[in-house]
Amino acid sequence: MKRRRAALALALVPLATACASGTGDGSGAKQVTVTVGYQSKTINTVTAGTLLRSLGYFEEELARQGRKDGVSYRVSWQDHATGAPITAQMTAGKIDIGSMGDFPLLLNAARGKQLEQPTRLVSVTGYNLRGGLNTVVTAPDSPLRTLADLKGRTVSTSVGSAADGTLVRALRRAGLDPEKDVRKLNQQPSVGASALAAGSADALSQFVAWPGLLAFQGRARALYDGAELDLPTFHGVTVRERFAKERPAVLDAFLRAQRRATDELRARPVAAAESVAEETGLPAEAVYLYNGARGVATFDPALRPELVAALKEDVPVLRAAGLVEDVDVDAFVDTAPLRRAVTGAAYPEAAPPRPELWLRGQASTRTFDGPGALLKAVGEAGTARVRAAYVPDSVTGTPWFADRAVWVRDGGEWRAFMTRAGAERYAAGHAGARIVAYADAVESAS
Image 1 (cartoon, rainbow, N blue to C red):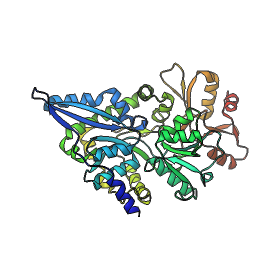
Image 2 (image 1 turned 60 degrees about the horizontal axis):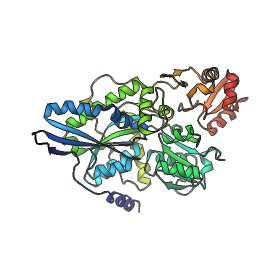
Image 3 (image 1 turned 90 degrees about the horizontal axis):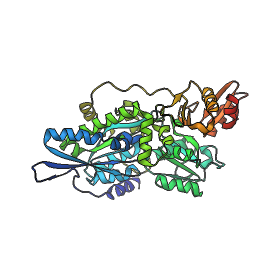
Image 4 (image 1 turned 45 degrees about the vertical axis):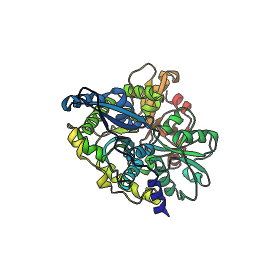
C-alpha cells in the first residue's frame, strides 16, 4: 500500500523540457534565462533566496560570467510557500535551482530519480544542529502543556516537511502513535496558522519563521522545542543535474553569490533582518530571532558531515509515511560544485547562545552573559524602549523571545525556558525553584 501511495504521488508530477532557455537578440549575443525557486517566508533560506535576490549578487556574478562567454543572462525568481511546488517545477524542467528543507530535499531527490529528472544537493543555507528550526505551538490560552496532551487532538502541519518530521518523531518519543493518536491536517503554514486561531486545530507544527512569528504576534505559545530531539535540521540548495552539467559556470556563479550573501548576513545581521523584513512583510524582530548573530539558524553553505548523516536518518521517517520508497543520499549529495566555486577559509562554529537585547532606534544589539543580566537591562531601559529581547532556552539553547519565555527563579539565579513543560521539569527537580511571570522577573532583577 505504501509503495503504491509513493508511486502515485510521484506520477502526479508532470514532465517537461529544461527551463534554462536561450534565445538570440539579433546582435549575435545569446540570452539565457535561469529560473530560481525560493521560499521568501522560510527565512533560513534567505542566502539562496530573499536576501540574495535583494542584494543582486547572482545577477552580478552572471554579468561577469556573461562577459566571458558572450551570453546575456537573466534571472527569473519564483517564490513559493513550501518546497513541494519547487520540486514539482524542477522535475517538470521549469526551475533550475531551488532551496528547501531537509525532508523536502529528500522528496526532491526521490521525485527526480523516479521521473528521470535527477537533482543534486549542492549547498546548505541555514542549519541548527539540535533541530531548533522546527517548533510545535498551540494557542496562547490552550490547556495543553505537553506533547502527551495532544492525544485525541488535531494538529496542523505540512506533510512531508521538516516540521512534520519533527512532529512524528516527537510524538513517538512521547509514547504516541502519529497515525492513530492524533488527527493531522495537511495544510500550508498560513492555512494552519488560521486553523489554530479559529480553533479548528489544537496545535501547529511548522518550520521557520511561523512559530516565532505567531509567538511574537501573541497568537501562539511554544508547546515543543524541536531541539529537544537533538537531531540536526537544515535547509539547502538543490539543482537539476542536467542543468548543472550543461551550465556549470552558472551554478558556480550561484554558489559564489550565495557565499557573498552569507558573508553579508553574518557581518551585518541586523541590517540583513531589516532587509528580509522589508522584502517579505515579516516583522524584523521575528526574522532576527532565526537569522540573528546568535539566532536559531547558523548560516554556512558547507555540506557538513553531521547534516548529511542527519539526512540519512530522515529517510526512514518518509518511507514509513509512504512518501518515498528509498533515497540514495550519497548519490544525491554533490560537494564538488561548492568546492570548485568557492575558495577560502571555512566559517567559524556557531557562536554560543547568549541573551540579546535590541532597543528601538538602535542599529545593533547588546549581548549579555546570562538571563539575569538581560532582565536587569530590560528593566533599566524600560519595556517601551525594547524592540525585542532574546534569551536561550536553559536546556536546549534555542533562542526565544524573552517576554514569551517561561521564567524560573532558582535561588539567586534566573533561567528561561521556551516551553512551560521545560520550566516545570526544571522546577520539579530543583527544590525552591519557582516559575515567575516575565514582568515580575524584570521588576525583581532591576
